[in-house]
Image (tube, rainbow, N blue to C red; front, side, top):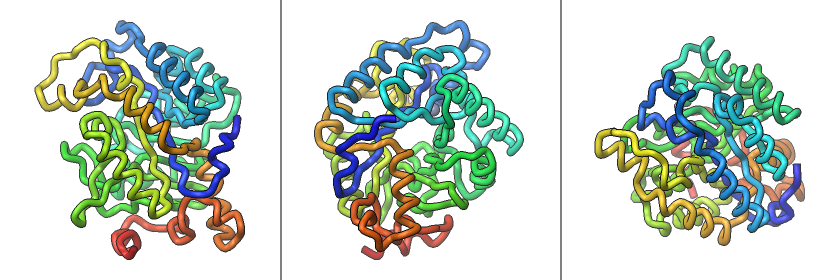
Length: 320
Ligand SMILES: [Zn+2]
């Protein structure tokens, strides 16, 4: 994979990530799985748009590809890889982990990993759960990912979600090792009046004014925490079909779709990003030798790259 020279510079480099899935995979729409195969793919255009924007800004990103999508559209996966980006797994059937047994989860992730590795011809080391559905109640996920030879996960949302679908308010918002060799890269938050709010991902990025996203990025970067921005491919497709859903879900899925491209461009113009695989490698190096010269160029402060359990993170995070 190509290395982004910008990411070699000092300071907090964040990650730009994309969940590669069709519009009808979104849980808010609840489109039955039996219908998926008959619905035409709309992935090509948004993926091309993302790839050309990234190319324009000489930025490399991480793409969490749904296994079902990879099986149906392998050439899209290849195109993303050929452009120098990291391919990671978003599971196969897009089932939240909270609705899967441990055995089902293992089968789903294994299937997605095999499909992706067959296409790209190299190991997949990152995983993101559908709907960020990993928390203390199912942290066996980390044991399974570890045994499947993943090197990192980016599924934990350390904030309450307004719609209640996910979120672990007490979890650490900084990257940390969850098992030997396995790191967690939590989704980004904005700290406001002592509360941690979700920001810079999906609907929060689309619906909030840009200054909120900028604020979240700046706040985290000041503390040397890499921000894991996340965008779904369908969020760059304002003309996608409208599925009939209740008003709140309609707002969550279709609200401000036209703004995503502009916001992505502004992020690319103002911030440096590196693939998560690269950031994980630096965290791993840094946690081994936090006092080394390399540590000065890494993303997070040494204590923030250390092993951290689920509980008790608030004290660590708020002491600054
Ligand atoms: Zn998804």
